Image (cartoon, rainbow, N blue to C red; front, top):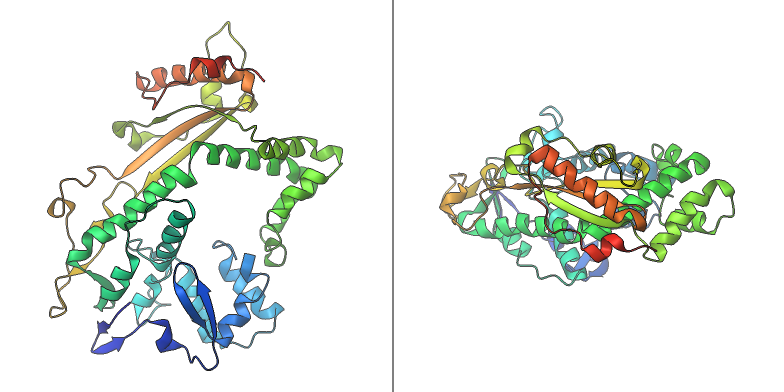
Length: 380
């Protein structure tokens, strides 16, 4: 952030203003350039647990790291760090008494603009070879604090919209890509089956065990000779060979059906097959219900963001999207249902049952594209 004004205080958020470079370590990041880390931060970063920290476990993991590595840190400072990890909308007014805007920097639950998104959007678009029109530095250099809230220049409204639209594009084309979701579904099945033998789920509540859960568990299953892991082993080997669950089709739930939409299940598809054909079972079908929005559900995210006109004014206000551009979307959420066949020889039967389900539920077949006939007939 650039200069931020709040009750006549000036706040500068550049890394150089916080870190004494005589005692800091310089690290080069391919997105953010040179970053200077103070000794206390390094003690956390240089632990095996930090290099593994999942957001749902982060707060408990911080306490574990402090105890496990005997890190000397002030308890109040530690408390503030843990509070900043939680989305700001979940924090009570009693635990945040001053400088509330600081709690919107890492996980902004009020309007969704935070440095976590700045980082992964730029990093992931670069890694995937996608163009990124979102300029996070522009926002960081111009934002300011008014009334204990981070506000943005009115003329940066399109930059903010690009933040949300780029995130949605990443979810649609990368994070929830049809093949990515196929692998996700297979991994879930493999780990669920393996849990009966390896008791993986018993580790997810304990920081001392949770940090050890990484991709090595796949290698453990894949190289094991235990009969109890055969189904899991076969699934992971299928993933390695790209013999994935077969994508049958998808559709976007009609807007007028979203209010009462319930997640589609394999049972819904199986119960929609016609008699006389192949008898499908629930375990033959996988379904992925994917919700993509601009962080505020079906609402326009710009409506929860406060703007200012210029640095001479302390007035903050919201901007309605019809004042920005008529090219912006009129709807802000998609619900996409994808159906997969776990066996290649059942693609045709699953595809037909899926079409029947759509006709029965919506009276139409609002599919993105029909399943190619040669794919339905393909048997391996």
